[in-house]
Amino acid sequence: MLTKKINLWENNETAFLSTYILDNSDELHPNKKRPAVIICPGGAYLATSDREAEPVALRFAAKGFHVFVLRYSCLLKNFEDFDLLLEEGSLPEINKNTQMPQPLYDLAKTFLIIGQHADEWHVDMDKIAICGFSAGAHLTASMGVHWHRSTLKDKFSVESSKFKPAALILGYPLIDYSLTEENSRGDEFTGKLFEFSRLAHFGEKYPSKEKMKQASPIHFVSENTPPTFIWHTDNDELVDSENSLAMGLALRKKQVPFEMHIFENGVHGLSLADEVSAGDSTYINEAAQAWLPMALKWLEKQNFTL
Amino acid sequence: MLTKKINLWENNETAFLSTYILDNSDELHPNKKRPAVIICPGGAYLATSDREAEPVALRFAAKGFHVFVLRYSCLLKNFEDFDLLLEEGSLPEINKNTQMPQPLYDLAKTFLIIGQHADEWHVDMDKIAICGFSAGAHLTASMGVHWHRSTLKDKFSVESSKFKPAALILGYPLIDYSLTEENSRGDEFTGKLFEFSRLAHFGEKYPSKEKMKQASPIHFVSENTPPTFIWHTDNDELVDSENSLAMGLALRKKQVPFEMHIFENGVHGLSLADEVSAGDSTYINEAAQAWLPMALKWLEKQNFTL
Image (tube, rainbow over the protein chains, first blue to last red):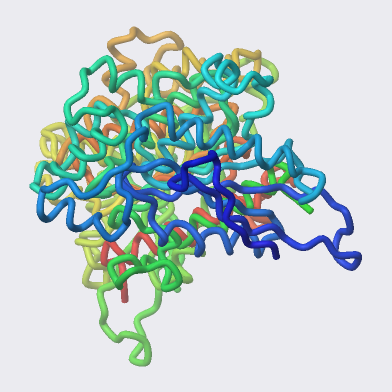
Protein backbone atom coordinates (compact mmCIF):
# COMPACT_ATOMS: atom_id res chain seq x y z
CA MET A 1 0.00 0.00 0.00
CA LEU A 2 1.23 3.46 -0.85
CA THR A 3 0.61 5.85 2.03
CA LYS A 4 1.74 9.36 1.45
CA LYS A 5 0.74 12.90 2.22
CA ILE A 6 -0.07 15.05 -0.80
CA ASN A 7 -0.52 18.78 -0.36
CA LEU A 8 -3.38 20.10 -2.46
CA TRP A 9 -1.99 23.53 -3.06
CA GLU A 10 1.48 25.06 -3.26
CA ASN A 11 2.53 27.13 -0.27
CA ASN A 12 -0.36 25.79 1.81
CA GLU A 13 0.02 22.81 4.09
CA THR A 14 -3.38 23.01 5.74
CA ALA A 15 -5.26 21.07 3.07
CA PHE A 16 -3.89 17.69 2.06
CA LEU A 17 -4.62 14.11 1.17
CA SER A 18 -3.54 10.98 3.02
CA THR A 19 -3.46 8.12 0.54
CA TYR A 20 -4.17 4.42 0.98
CA ILE A 21 -3.36 3.25 -2.54
CA LEU A 22 -3.45 -0.51 -2.94
CA ASP A 23 -0.50 -2.27 -4.55
CA ASN A 24 -0.85 -3.54 -8.07
CA SER A 25 0.09 -7.22 -8.08
CA ASP A 26 0.27 -9.86 -10.78
CA GLU A 27 -1.54 -12.17 -8.40
CA LEU A 28 -4.41 -9.84 -7.57
CA HIS A 29 -6.51 -8.40 -10.36
CA PRO A 30 -3.35 -7.27 -12.22
CA ASN A 31 -3.60 -3.77 -13.71
CA LYS A 32 -7.24 -3.63 -12.67
CA LYS A 33 -8.42 -0.06 -12.31
CA ARG A 34 -10.03 -0.12 -8.92
CA PRO A 35 -12.85 2.02 -7.52
CA ALA A 36 -11.78 4.66 -5.01
CA VAL A 37 -13.33 6.32 -1.99
CA ILE A 38 -12.55 9.85 -0.82
CA ILE A 39 -13.15 10.24 2.91
CA CYS A 40 -14.17 13.62 4.32
CA PRO A 41 -13.99 13.46 8.12
CA GLY A 42 -16.20 15.74 10.20
CA GLY A 43 -15.23 18.43 12.69
CA ALA A 44 -17.60 21.35 12.20
CA TYR A 45 -15.18 22.95 9.72
CA LEU A 46 -12.99 23.70 12.73
CA ALA A 47 -10.76 20.66 12.20
CA THR A 48 -10.97 17.17 10.70
CA SER A 49 -11.46 14.29 13.09
CA ASP A 50 -9.00 11.39 13.13
CA ARG A 51 -11.83 9.16 14.36
CA GLU A 52 -13.55 9.52 10.99
CA ALA A 53 -10.35 9.21 8.95
CA GLU A 54 -8.00 6.21 9.07
CA PRO A 55 -10.36 3.73 10.81
CA VAL A 56 -12.93 4.31 8.06
CA ALA A 57 -10.34 4.40 5.28
CA LEU A 58 -9.08 0.96 6.24
CA ARG A 59 -12.55 -0.60 5.99
CA PHE A 60 -12.89 0.56 2.40
CA ALA A 61 -9.28 -0.37 1.59
CA ALA A 62 -9.93 -3.85 3.03
CA LYS A 63 -12.77 -4.15 0.52
CA GLY A 64 -10.26 -3.60 -2.30
CA PHE A 65 -10.82 0.08 -2.98
CA HIS A 66 -8.21 2.82 -3.06
CA VAL A 67 -8.85 5.40 -0.38
CA PHE A 68 -7.95 9.07 -0.01
CA VAL A 69 -8.59 10.89 3.24
CA LEU A 70 -9.12 14.56 2.53
CA ARG A 71 -8.01 17.03 5.19
CA TYR A 72 -9.88 20.02 3.79
CA SER A 73 -9.39 23.65 4.84
CA CYS A 74 -10.52 24.17 8.43
CA LEU A 75 -10.38 27.03 10.90
CA LEU A 76 -7.91 25.67 13.46
CA LYS A 77 -4.23 25.34 12.73
CA ASN A 78 -3.86 22.79 15.51
CA PHE A 79 -6.45 20.14 16.23
CA GLU A 80 -5.54 20.30 19.93
CA ASP A 81 -7.05 23.79 20.04
CA PHE A 82 -10.52 22.36 19.37
CA ASP A 83 -11.37 21.96 23.06
CA LEU A 84 -9.55 25.15 23.96
CA LEU A 85 -11.63 27.10 21.48
CA LEU A 86 -14.88 25.88 22.91
CA GLU A 87 -13.90 25.94 26.56
CA GLU A 88 -12.12 29.26 26.63
CA GLY A 89 -14.12 31.05 24.01
CA SER A 90 -10.85 32.60 22.89
CA LEU A 91 -9.64 32.27 19.34
CA PRO A 92 -6.38 30.35 18.96
CA GLU A 93 -4.21 30.57 15.87
CA ILE A 94 -6.51 30.15 12.90
CA ASN A 95 -6.37 29.58 9.18
CA LYS A 96 -7.66 32.17 6.81
CA ASN A 97 -9.27 31.14 3.57
CA THR A 98 -11.45 28.38 4.99
CA GLN A 99 -14.64 29.98 3.80
CA MET A 100 -16.75 28.32 1.20
CA PRO A 101 -16.17 27.48 -1.55
CA GLN A 102 -12.61 26.77 -0.40
CA PRO A 103 -13.38 23.30 1.06
CA LEU A 104 -15.28 22.48 -2.14
CA TYR A 105 -12.24 23.57 -4.15
CA ASP A 106 -10.14 21.25 -1.98
CA LEU A 107 -12.43 18.36 -2.82
CA ALA A 108 -12.51 19.26 -6.51
CA LYS A 109 -8.70 19.44 -6.53
CA THR A 110 -8.67 15.97 -4.99
CA PHE A 111 -10.54 14.63 -8.03
CA LEU A 112 -8.02 16.32 -10.36
CA ILE A 113 -5.02 14.96 -8.48
CA ILE A 114 -6.42 11.44 -8.50
CA GLY A 115 -7.22 11.86 -12.19
CA GLN A 116 -3.66 12.89 -12.97
CA HIS A 117 -2.37 9.71 -11.35
CA ALA A 118 -5.18 7.41 -12.46
CA ASP A 119 -2.98 5.25 -14.70
CA GLU A 120 -0.08 5.12 -12.26
CA TRP A 121 -2.32 4.24 -9.32
CA HIS A 122 -4.81 2.13 -11.30
CA VAL A 123 -7.88 4.14 -10.36
CA ASP A 124 -11.20 3.83 -12.19
CA MET A 125 -12.23 7.48 -12.43
CA ASP A 126 -15.84 6.51 -13.19
CA LYS A 127 -16.05 4.90 -9.77
CA ILE A 128 -15.10 7.53 -7.25
CA ALA A 129 -17.31 7.62 -4.19
CA ILE A 130 -17.16 10.28 -1.50
CA CYS A 131 -17.87 9.28 2.08
CA GLY A 132 -18.30 12.13 4.54
CA PHE A 133 -19.32 12.61 8.14
CA SER A 134 -21.08 15.58 9.73
CA ALA A 135 -19.43 18.72 8.26
CA GLY A 136 -17.51 16.39 5.96
CA ALA A 137 -20.87 14.98 4.83
CA HIS A 138 -22.00 18.56 4.22
CA LEU A 139 -18.96 18.95 1.98
CA THR A 140 -19.68 15.59 0.32
CA ALA A 141 -23.30 16.52 -0.36
CA SER A 142 -22.19 19.94 -1.63
CA MET A 143 -19.97 18.24 -4.19
CA GLY A 144 -22.84 15.90 -5.07
CA VAL A 145 -25.16 18.77 -5.91
CA HIS A 146 -22.62 21.23 -7.38
CA TRP A 147 -20.10 19.11 -9.35
CA HIS A 148 -21.72 20.01 -12.67
CA ARG A 149 -22.08 23.74 -12.06
CA SER A 150 -19.92 26.49 -13.48
CA THR A 151 -18.23 27.40 -10.17
CA LEU A 152 -15.85 24.45 -10.35
CA LYS A 153 -15.50 24.35 -14.13
CA ASP A 154 -14.53 28.03 -14.20
CA LYS A 155 -12.15 27.81 -11.27
CA PHE A 156 -10.15 24.95 -12.73
CA SER A 157 -10.83 25.41 -16.46
CA VAL A 158 -11.63 21.74 -16.98
CA GLU A 159 -14.76 19.81 -17.93
CA SER A 160 -17.32 19.29 -15.18
CA SER A 161 -17.18 15.54 -15.71
CA LYS A 162 -13.76 15.52 -14.01
CA PHE A 163 -15.51 16.24 -10.71
CA LYS A 164 -18.33 13.76 -11.02
CA PRO A 165 -18.71 11.45 -8.03
CA ALA A 166 -20.30 8.09 -8.80
CA ALA A 167 -21.80 7.74 -5.34
CA LEU A 168 -22.15 9.62 -2.06
CA ILE A 169 -22.14 8.23 1.47
CA LEU A 170 -23.40 10.69 4.06
CA GLY A 171 -22.98 10.00 7.78
CA TYR A 172 -25.06 12.24 10.08
CA PRO A 173 -24.85 15.00 7.48
CA LEU A 174 -25.57 18.68 7.84
CA ILE A 175 -27.75 19.34 4.79
CA ASP A 176 -29.80 22.38 5.71
CA TYR A 177 -28.16 25.19 7.69
CA SER A 178 -31.54 26.57 8.74
CA LEU A 179 -31.93 23.48 10.96
CA THR A 180 -28.85 24.43 12.98
CA GLU A 181 -30.76 27.41 14.25
CA GLU A 182 -34.01 25.59 14.91
CA ASN A 183 -32.75 22.31 16.20
CA SER A 184 -29.41 22.66 17.93
CA ARG A 185 -29.75 21.99 21.62
CA GLY A 186 -28.93 25.55 22.47
CA ASP A 187 -26.60 24.75 25.34
CA GLU A 188 -23.39 26.74 25.63
CA PHE A 189 -21.16 24.12 24.04
CA THR A 190 -23.39 23.65 21.01
CA GLY A 191 -24.00 27.34 20.63
CA LYS A 192 -20.26 28.11 20.56
CA LEU A 193 -19.52 25.18 18.30
CA PHE A 194 -21.98 26.38 15.69
CA GLU A 195 -20.80 29.99 16.06
CA PHE A 196 -17.20 29.07 15.25
CA SER A 197 -18.28 26.59 12.63
CA ARG A 198 -20.18 29.34 10.85
CA LEU A 199 -17.20 31.66 11.28
CA ALA A 200 -15.08 29.05 9.50
CA HIS A 201 -17.56 28.45 6.73
CA PHE A 202 -19.05 31.90 6.15
CA GLY A 203 -16.41 34.22 7.62
CA GLU A 204 -18.96 35.49 10.12
CA LYS A 205 -20.71 33.99 13.11
CA TYR A 206 -24.20 35.08 12.08
CA PRO A 207 -24.57 34.95 8.30
CA SER A 208 -27.83 36.01 6.67
CA LYS A 209 -30.59 33.49 5.99
CA GLU A 210 -29.86 33.85 2.28
CA LYS A 211 -26.18 32.95 2.75
CA MET A 212 -27.13 29.92 4.82
CA LYS A 213 -29.61 28.87 2.16
CA GLN A 214 -26.95 29.09 -0.54
CA ALA A 215 -24.69 26.89 1.58
CA SER A 216 -27.37 24.22 2.11
CA PRO A 217 -27.21 21.28 -0.33
CA ILE A 218 -30.89 20.54 0.23
CA HIS A 219 -31.79 23.39 -2.12
CA PHE A 220 -29.64 22.15 -5.00
CA VAL A 221 -30.55 18.46 -5.33
CA SER A 222 -31.15 17.65 -8.99
CA GLU A 223 -31.22 14.79 -11.49
CA ASN A 224 -27.43 15.23 -11.66
CA THR A 225 -26.97 14.32 -8.01
CA PRO A 226 -25.38 10.85 -7.80
CA PRO A 227 -26.93 7.87 -5.97
CA THR A 228 -26.68 8.48 -2.25
CA PHE A 229 -26.44 6.38 0.91
CA ILE A 230 -27.44 8.22 4.09
CA TRP A 231 -27.28 7.24 7.72
CA HIS A 232 -28.02 9.05 10.95
CA THR A 233 -29.27 8.44 14.47
CA ASP A 234 -32.76 9.72 15.22
CA ASN A 235 -31.71 11.32 18.50
CA ASP A 236 -28.43 12.88 17.26
CA GLU A 237 -28.00 15.73 19.70
CA LEU A 238 -25.91 17.98 17.45
CA VAL A 239 -27.03 17.60 13.82
CA ASP A 240 -30.75 16.91 13.68
CA SER A 241 -31.75 13.74 11.84
CA GLU A 242 -34.29 15.92 10.03
CA ASN A 243 -31.33 16.85 7.79
CA SER A 244 -31.18 13.29 6.49
CA LEU A 245 -34.93 12.86 6.22
CA ALA A 246 -35.21 16.06 4.21
CA MET A 247 -32.35 14.92 1.96
CA GLY A 248 -34.11 11.61 1.38
CA LEU A 249 -37.30 13.41 0.37
CA ALA A 250 -35.39 15.75 -1.96
CA LEU A 251 -33.64 12.81 -3.65
CA ARG A 252 -36.92 10.92 -3.91
CA LYS A 253 -38.63 13.85 -5.58
CA LYS A 254 -35.81 14.06 -8.17
CA GLN A 255 -35.86 10.27 -8.69
CA VAL A 256 -32.25 9.95 -7.54
CA PRO A 257 -31.74 6.43 -6.14
CA PHE A 258 -30.87 6.44 -2.47
CA GLU A 259 -30.67 4.25 0.59
CA MET A 260 -31.20 5.57 4.10
CA HIS A 261 -30.79 4.16 7.58
CA ILE A 262 -31.88 6.09 10.65
CA PHE A 263 -30.99 4.22 13.83
CA GLU A 264 -33.03 5.06 16.90
CA ASN A 265 -30.22 5.75 19.33
CA GLY A 266 -26.76 7.18 19.15
CA VAL A 267 -24.70 10.28 19.84
CA HIS A 268 -23.38 12.51 17.10
CA GLY A 269 -20.06 11.44 15.59
CA LEU A 270 -20.31 7.65 15.83
CA SER A 271 -17.97 7.00 12.90
CA LEU A 272 -17.77 3.17 12.68
CA ALA A 273 -19.58 2.93 16.04
CA ASP A 274 -17.19 0.19 17.16
CA GLU A 275 -14.09 -0.02 19.36
CA VAL A 276 -11.80 0.76 16.41
CA SER A 277 -13.10 4.29 15.98
CA ALA A 278 -14.55 4.98 19.43
CA GLY A 279 -12.94 7.62 21.65
CA ASP A 280 -14.82 6.17 24.60
CA SER A 281 -17.69 3.76 25.21
CA THR A 282 -20.28 6.41 24.28
CA TYR A 283 -19.21 5.85 20.70
CA ILE A 284 -19.79 2.11 20.67
CA ASN A 285 -23.24 1.33 19.28
CA GLU A 286 -24.02 -2.16 18.12
CA ALA A 287 -27.12 -1.30 16.09
CA ALA A 288 -25.45 1.55 14.23
CA GLN A 289 -22.43 -0.60 13.33
CA ALA A 290 -24.67 -2.05 10.62
CA TRP A 291 -24.27 1.06 8.47
CA LEU A 292 -20.86 0.14 7.06
CA PRO A 293 -21.64 -3.41 5.87
CA MET A 294 -24.86 -2.06 4.36
CA ALA A 295 -22.94 0.76 2.67
CA LEU A 296 -20.47 -1.75 1.21
CA LYS A 297 -23.35 -3.87 -0.13
CA TRP A 298 -24.91 -0.74 -1.56
CA LEU A 299 -21.63 0.25 -3.27
CA GLU A 300 -21.58 -3.18 -4.92
CA LYS A 301 -24.95 -2.34 -6.42
CA GLN A 302 -23.42 0.88 -7.75
CA ASN A 303 -20.92 -1.40 -9.55
CA PHE A 304 -18.11 -0.77 -7.10
CA THR A 305 -16.66 -4.23 -7.63
CA LEU A 306 -13.29 -5.76 -8.43
CA MET B 1 -47.42 -23.82 20.85
CA LEU B 2 -51.13 -23.13 20.82
CA THR B 3 -52.32 -22.47 17.29
CA LYS B 4 -55.97 -21.73 16.97
CA LYS B 5 -58.36 -19.62 14.98
CA ILE B 6 -60.34 -17.10 16.98
CA ASN B 7 -63.20 -15.25 15.37
CA LEU B 8 -63.30 -11.61 16.39
CA TRP B 9 -67.04 -11.16 16.16
CA GLU B 10 -70.08 -13.39 16.52
CA ASN B 11 -71.82 -14.31 13.28
CA ASN B 12 -68.89 -13.07 11.22
CA GLU B 13 -66.12 -15.35 10.08
CA THR B 14 -64.32 -12.89 7.85
CA ALA B 15 -62.21 -11.29 10.58
CA PHE B 16 -60.19 -13.59 12.80
CA LEU B 17 -56.94 -14.24 14.61
CA SER B 18 -54.47 -17.05 14.03
CA THR B 19 -52.54 -17.57 17.22
CA TYR B 20 -48.95 -18.67 17.81
CA ILE B 21 -48.98 -18.79 21.60
CA LEU B 22 -45.81 -20.19 23.11
CA ASP B 23 -46.06 -22.94 25.70
CA ASN B 24 -45.43 -22.12 29.30
CA SER B 25 -42.78 -24.47 30.63
CA ASP B 26 -41.11 -24.93 33.99
CA GLU B 27 -37.81 -25.11 32.15
CA LEU B 28 -38.23 -21.92 30.11
CA HIS B 29 -38.93 -18.67 31.92
CA PRO B 30 -41.79 -20.30 33.88
CA ASN B 31 -44.91 -18.15 34.16
CA LYS B 32 -43.06 -15.32 32.47
CA LYS B 33 -45.45 -12.90 30.82
CA ARG B 34 -43.99 -12.59 27.36
CA PRO B 35 -44.18 -9.72 24.88
CA ALA B 36 -46.49 -10.26 21.93
CA VAL B 37 -46.61 -9.16 18.33
CA ILE B 38 -49.78 -8.68 16.30
CA ILE B 39 -49.14 -9.15 12.58
CA CYS B 40 -51.26 -7.26 10.04
CA PRO B 41 -50.53 -8.64 6.57
CA GLY B 42 -50.99 -6.44 3.54
CA GLY B 43 -53.30 -6.87 0.57
CA ALA B 44 -54.71 -3.46 -0.32
CA TYR B 45 -57.72 -4.08 1.98
CA LEU B 46 -58.90 -6.55 -0.66
CA ALA B 47 -57.50 -9.58 1.16
CA THR B 48 -54.70 -10.42 3.59
CA SER B 49 -51.57 -11.97 2.15
CA ASP B 50 -50.29 -15.31 3.43
CA ARG B 51 -46.77 -14.23 2.47
CA GLU B 52 -46.85 -11.58 5.19
CA ALA B 53 -48.54 -13.82 7.76
CA GLU B 54 -47.12 -17.14 9.00
CA PRO B 55 -43.53 -16.71 7.70
CA VAL B 56 -43.26 -13.43 9.61
CA ALA B 57 -45.11 -14.77 12.66
CA LEU B 58 -42.62 -17.59 13.05
CA ARG B 59 -39.62 -15.23 13.11
CA PHE B 60 -41.11 -13.34 16.06
CA ALA B 61 -42.23 -16.56 17.76
CA ALA B 62 -38.69 -17.93 17.36
CA LYS B 63 -37.49 -14.87 19.28
CA GLY B 64 -39.70 -15.90 22.21
CA PHE B 65 -42.70 -13.66 21.62
CA HIS B 66 -46.33 -14.69 21.33
CA VAL B 67 -47.72 -13.85 17.92
CA PHE B 68 -51.22 -13.17 16.63
CA VAL B 69 -51.86 -12.84 12.91
CA LEU B 70 -54.86 -10.61 12.36
CA ARG B 71 -57.02 -11.32 9.33
CA TYR B 72 -58.92 -8.04 9.38
CA SER B 73 -62.05 -7.22 7.39
CA CYS B 74 -61.29 -7.13 3.66
CA LEU B 75 -63.36 -6.81 0.51
CA LEU B 76 -62.95 -10.24 -1.02
CA LYS B 77 -64.62 -13.31 0.45
CA ASN B 78 -62.15 -15.57 -1.31
CA PHE B 79 -58.48 -14.71 -1.64
CA GLU B 80 -58.40 -16.51 -4.99
CA ASP B 81 -60.62 -13.79 -6.42
CA PHE B 82 -57.81 -11.26 -6.01
CA ASP B 83 -56.42 -11.82 -9.49
CA LEU B 84 -59.88 -12.27 -10.98
CA LEU B 85 -60.94 -8.92 -9.63
CA LEU B 86 -58.03 -7.10 -11.20
CA GLU B 87 -57.95 -9.01 -14.45
CA GLU B 88 -61.63 -9.09 -15.20
CA GLY B 89 -62.64 -5.83 -13.64
CA SER B 90 -65.74 -7.64 -12.45
CA LEU B 91 -66.71 -7.73 -8.83
CA PRO B 92 -66.74 -11.23 -7.30
CA GLU B 93 -68.51 -12.06 -4.07
CA ILE B 94 -67.55 -9.37 -1.60
CA ASN B 95 -67.80 -8.60 2.08
CA LYS B 96 -69.81 -5.68 3.27
CA ASN B 97 -68.73 -3.77 6.33
CA THR B 98 -65.07 -3.52 5.42
CA GLN B 99 -65.05 0.27 5.47
CA MET B 100 -63.07 2.14 8.02
CA PRO B 101 -63.14 2.15 10.95
CA GLN B 102 -64.07 -1.54 10.74
CA PRO B 103 -60.48 -2.81 10.29
CA LEU B 104 -59.43 -0.56 13.18
CA TYR B 105 -62.23 -2.08 15.29
CA ASP B 106 -60.88 -5.51 14.35
CA LEU B 107 -57.43 -4.54 15.59
CA ALA B 108 -58.83 -2.98 18.75
CA LYS B 109 -60.87 -6.12 19.43
CA THR B 110 -57.64 -8.10 19.06
CA PHE B 111 -56.15 -6.15 21.95
CA LEU B 112 -59.24 -6.87 24.07
CA ILE B 113 -59.23 -10.57 23.29
CA ILE B 114 -55.54 -10.87 24.12
CA GLY B 115 -56.17 -8.89 27.30
CA GLN B 116 -58.96 -11.23 28.37
CA HIS B 117 -56.59 -14.18 28.07
CA ALA B 118 -53.43 -12.42 29.28
CA ASP B 119 -53.09 -14.53 32.44
CA GLU B 120 -53.97 -17.81 30.73
CA TRP B 121 -51.57 -17.20 27.83
CA HIS B 122 -48.90 -15.36 29.86
CA VAL B 123 -48.95 -12.17 27.82
CA ASP B 124 -47.39 -8.92 29.02
CA MET B 125 -50.04 -6.42 27.93
CA ASP B 126 -47.56 -3.53 28.28
CA LYS B 127 -45.47 -5.07 25.54
CA ILE B 128 -47.72 -5.52 22.54
CA ALA B 129 -46.14 -4.56 19.24
CA ILE B 130 -48.01 -4.36 15.95
CA CYS B 131 -46.15 -5.28 12.78
CA GLY B 132 -47.91 -4.45 9.53
CA PHE B 133 -47.16 -4.49 5.84
CA SER B 134 -48.55 -2.20 3.12
CA ALA B 135 -52.30 -1.81 3.84
CA GLY B 136 -51.66 -3.73 7.06
CA ALA B 137 -49.03 -1.13 7.92
CA HIS B 138 -51.63 1.55 7.21
CA LEU B 139 -53.86 -0.20 9.73
CA THR B 140 -50.94 -0.51 12.18
CA ALA B 141 -50.09 3.17 11.85
CA SER B 142 -53.77 4.08 12.20
CA MET B 143 -53.87 2.26 15.53
CA GLY B 144 -50.63 3.96 16.54
CA VAL B 145 -52.10 7.42 16.02
CA HIS B 146 -55.72 6.76 17.11
CA TRP B 147 -55.49 4.31 20.06
CA HIS B 148 -56.06 7.09 22.61
CA ARG B 149 -58.95 8.80 20.83
CA SER B 150 -62.64 8.57 21.71
CA THR B 151 -63.62 6.50 18.65
CA LEU B 152 -62.31 3.27 20.15
CA LYS B 153 -63.09 4.09 23.77
CA ASP B 154 -66.71 4.86 22.92
CA LYS B 155 -67.18 1.84 20.66
CA PHE B 156 -65.98 -0.65 23.27
CA SER B 157 -66.73 1.27 26.48
CA VAL B 158 -63.29 0.56 27.95
CA GLU B 159 -60.29 2.69 28.84
CA SER B 160 -58.09 3.80 25.96
CA SER B 161 -55.04 2.25 27.62
CA LYS B 162 -56.41 -1.19 26.67
CA PHE B 163 -55.55 -0.42 23.04
CA LYS B 164 -52.12 1.03 23.58
CA PRO B 165 -49.43 -0.55 21.42
CA ALA B 166 -45.92 -0.40 22.87
CA ALA B 167 -44.25 -0.33 19.46
CA LEU B 168 -45.09 -0.23 15.76
CA ILE B 169 -43.27 -1.91 12.89
CA LEU B 170 -44.27 -0.57 9.48
CA GLY B 171 -43.21 -2.37 6.30
CA TYR B 172 -43.70 -0.35 3.09
CA PRO B 173 -46.60 1.46 4.71
CA LEU B 174 -49.34 3.51 3.13
CA ILE B 175 -49.37 6.58 5.37
CA ASP B 176 -50.77 9.35 3.21
CA TYR B 177 -53.64 8.54 0.82
CA SER B 178 -52.95 11.69 -1.20
CA LEU B 179 -49.72 10.04 -2.40
CA THR B 180 -51.69 7.20 -3.99
CA GLU B 181 -53.08 9.70 -6.46
CA GLU B 182 -49.80 11.46 -7.14
CA ASN B 183 -47.41 8.57 -7.12
CA SER B 184 -49.04 5.37 -8.24
CA ARG B 185 -47.65 4.22 -11.54
CA GLY B 186 -50.90 4.82 -13.27
CA ASP B 187 -50.87 1.61 -15.29
CA GLU B 188 -54.09 -0.35 -15.55
CA PHE B 189 -53.22 -2.88 -12.86
CA THR B 190 -52.27 -0.25 -10.31
CA GLY B 191 -55.20 1.96 -11.18
CA LYS B 192 -57.69 -0.86 -10.66
CA LEU B 193 -55.96 -2.06 -7.52
CA PHE B 194 -56.25 1.35 -5.90
CA GLU B 195 -59.84 1.76 -7.13
CA PHE B 196 -60.95 -1.43 -5.44
CA SER B 197 -58.78 -0.76 -2.42
CA ARG B 198 -60.53 2.57 -1.94
CA LEU B 199 -63.89 0.89 -2.50
CA ALA B 200 -63.02 -1.49 0.33
CA HIS B 201 -61.79 1.21 2.66
CA PHE B 202 -64.11 4.12 1.88
CA GLY B 203 -67.11 2.43 0.29
CA GLU B 204 -66.48 4.35 -2.91
CA LYS B 205 -63.81 4.29 -5.57
CA TYR B 206 -63.21 8.04 -5.56
CA PRO B 207 -63.60 9.48 -2.06
CA SER B 208 -63.19 13.19 -1.45
CA LYS B 209 -59.82 14.68 -0.55
CA GLU B 210 -61.14 15.34 2.94
CA LYS B 211 -62.11 11.68 3.45
CA MET B 212 -58.68 10.57 2.26
CA LYS B 213 -57.05 13.04 4.61
CA GLN B 214 -59.04 11.69 7.56
CA ALA B 215 -57.88 8.18 6.64
CA SER B 216 -54.19 9.17 6.47
CA PRO B 217 -52.20 8.52 9.67
CA ILE B 218 -49.64 11.17 8.69
CA HIS B 219 -52.07 13.87 9.85
CA PHE B 220 -52.59 12.38 13.31
CA VAL B 221 -49.09 11.69 14.59
CA SER B 222 -48.75 12.98 18.15
CA GLU B 223 -46.74 12.59 21.34
CA ASN B 224 -49.01 9.59 22.06
CA THR B 225 -47.79 7.69 19.02
CA PRO B 226 -45.59 4.80 20.17
CA PRO B 227 -41.94 4.29 19.07
CA THR B 228 -41.92 3.19 15.46
CA PHE B 229 -39.67 1.13 13.19
CA ILE B 230 -40.17 1.80 9.48
CA TRP B 231 -38.75 0.13 6.40
CA HIS B 232 -39.35 0.55 2.70
CA THR B 233 -37.57 0.28 -0.64
CA ASP B 234 -36.80 3.56 -2.35
CA ASN B 235 -38.09 2.35 -5.71
CA ASP B 236 -41.26 0.62 -4.43
CA GLU B 237 -43.47 0.70 -7.51
CA LEU B 238 -46.81 0.58 -5.72
CA VAL B 239 -46.60 2.47 -2.42
CA ASP B 240 -44.19 5.39 -2.75
CA SER B 241 -41.34 5.47 -0.24
CA GLU B 242 -42.27 9.09 0.32
CA ASN B 243 -44.93 7.66 2.67
CA SER B 244 -42.20 6.41 4.99
CA LEU B 245 -40.03 9.50 4.70
CA ALA B 246 -42.99 11.72 5.55
CA MET B 247 -43.84 9.49 8.52
CA GLY B 248 -40.25 9.76 9.75
CA LEU B 249 -40.40 13.54 9.57
CA ALA B 250 -43.75 13.62 11.37
CA LEU B 251 -42.43 11.39 14.17
CA ARG B 252 -39.23 13.46 14.41
CA LYS B 253 -41.22 16.67 14.75
CA LYS B 254 -43.24 15.15 17.61
CA GLN B 255 -40.10 13.74 19.25
CA VAL B 256 -41.39 10.18 18.93
CA PRO B 257 -38.38 7.82 18.79
CA PHE B 258 -38.17 5.95 15.51
CA GLU B 259 -35.84 3.91 13.36
CA MET B 260 -36.05 3.86 9.57
CA HIS B 261 -34.43 1.83 6.83
CA ILE B 262 -34.97 2.66 3.17
CA PHE B 263 -33.25 0.13 0.94
CA GLU B 264 -32.40 1.28 -2.55
CA ASN B 265 -33.93 -1.55 -4.53
CA GLY B 266 -36.87 -3.83 -4.16
CA VAL B 267 -40.41 -4.47 -5.36
CA HIS B 268 -43.47 -3.80 -3.24
CA GLY B 269 -44.46 -6.63 -0.91
CA LEU B 270 -41.06 -8.12 -0.02
CA SER B 271 -42.20 -9.48 3.36
CA LEU B 272 -39.07 -11.22 4.77
CA ALA B 273 -37.37 -10.81 1.36
CA ASP B 274 -36.01 -14.35 1.60
CA GLU B 275 -36.95 -17.75 0.19
CA VAL B 276 -39.28 -18.46 3.11
CA SER B 277 -41.73 -15.72 2.19
CA ALA B 278 -40.98 -15.27 -1.51
CA GLY B 279 -43.62 -16.19 -4.09
CA ASP B 280 -40.92 -16.11 -6.75
CA SER B 281 -37.33 -14.87 -7.11
CA THR B 282 -38.49 -11.25 -7.54
CA TYR B 283 -39.19 -11.31 -3.82
CA ILE B 284 -35.72 -12.39 -2.76
CA ASN B 285 -33.61 -9.38 -1.85
CA GLU B 286 -30.47 -9.85 0.18
CA ALA B 287 -30.03 -6.22 1.22
CA ALA B 288 -33.62 -5.84 2.39
CA GLN B 289 -33.46 -9.05 4.45
CA ALA B 290 -31.61 -6.94 7.01
CA TRP B 291 -34.84 -5.31 8.15
CA LEU B 292 -35.99 -8.16 10.38
CA PRO B 293 -32.79 -8.65 12.42
CA MET B 294 -32.64 -4.86 12.84
CA ALA B 295 -36.29 -4.79 13.90
CA LEU B 296 -35.63 -7.51 16.49
CA LYS B 297 -32.66 -5.55 17.87
CA TRP B 298 -34.82 -2.45 17.96
CA LEU B 299 -37.58 -4.31 19.84
CA GLU B 300 -35.00 -5.32 22.45
CA LYS B 301 -34.32 -1.62 22.98
CA GLN B 302 -38.07 -1.14 23.52
CA ASN B 303 -37.68 -3.68 26.36
CA PHE B 304 -39.14 -6.55 24.37
CA THR B 305 -37.00 -9.08 26.21
CA LEU B 306 -37.50 -12.37 28.05
